[in-house]
Length: 258
Image 1 (cartoon, rainbow, N blue to C red):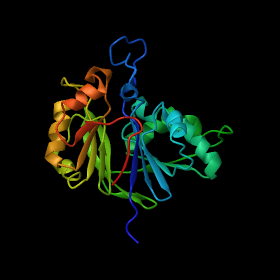
Image 2 (cartoon, rainbow, N blue to C red):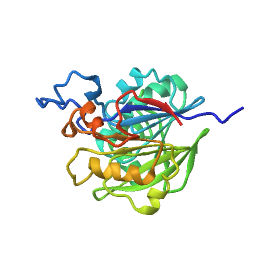
Image 3 (cartoon, one colour):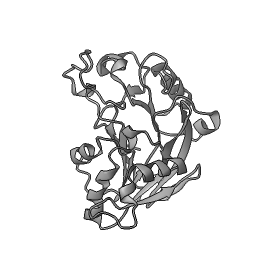
Image 4 (spheres, one colour):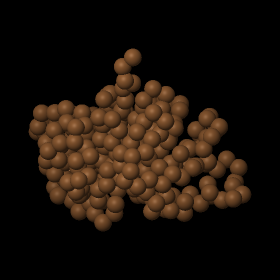
């Protein structure tokens, strides 16, 4: 039998406010095109019966329902901003279904933040129904969730360290504006790379569209996708027309295998 393929579902491609932004009247936020509707950034990775989500933001519940994710084995957290952690409480649905703790992987500083923010989940005498979470500290070393092996990729989000992840021939990096060459090398050889770009103009904490395209052209995957897209980027279909071959804006619900 051949090696089991890894399936990737892009659950959300929006920034911290999502798209449309509350109260915004710009043409992107008012667009009727479903490609311009973006939940907060997240991705589901599946291999056979193992299912892992990278980041559980405020739209986590909606994303799990939208894609009928009936089983979840672990959550990987890139960093501790609310648009990547705000939905962690909803893992308690899986606690109930699967009758076990949810494994949550992140670097030490992120785990400390989660332990403080969701303190009720870690009390000795927990409130009934509070989420059951097992915190798992990771550093730069590879680790496994059942039959999925992940390699952390260290990058910088302004002055904050963030993790991207590679599994098999798929690499994923969001909320970064800088990455050193040695960490970029970990992504080389990937068939598909997903990387963040907030907008066309340069930004203090995120790659711009040109910067993300440059990285993808350096890595030369078979397919490169852009995520964590703000309403300032422009309309999905119009931006895609100007991108080089093999590079596209990702969209919510995009699914592929590697």
